[in-house]
Amino acid sequence: MLKSRVHEANLRHQRGYNCAQSVVCTYCGLLNMSEADALRAMEAFAGGIAGSGSTCGALCGLLMLAGLKNSNGDVNDRSGRGSTVQLGRQLLTRFKAWNGSDVCRELKGLETGKVLRKCPGCIADAARLAEEVLFEGIFEPYAPRTEEE
Image (cartoon, rainbow, N blue to C red; front, side, top):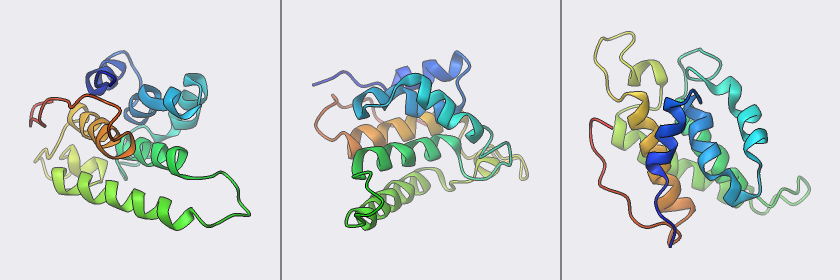
């Protein structure tokens, strides 16, 4: 079993990666994607998709990993498309259940003043879901979810 990379994802964020990059770059090597490609692909997802405050970047990164993991990459063979969407929905549902929202500005409390989850917590949650769902059985379990991550 591999050691959990949840902490590594947050270290990337501390070094300047955006939330989406932090998640995707932590696991992209397991899915035959280079870190340089992951950095470029996820660059515009900062600040809740292009700074709009919409869908959380960490969640966007997690959903990209789901596609890389589950899709067969053949546009003419749509047999797996439904299962990839279902997998994404499962991840989205769990993320929202843990955090009360999937919207960056709501998570950060930008409009309400009530912070639901800070970026490090969202990154950790996305990384946990990647390890628990996408890479089940590959990683050692990480410490339980905390409010202050």
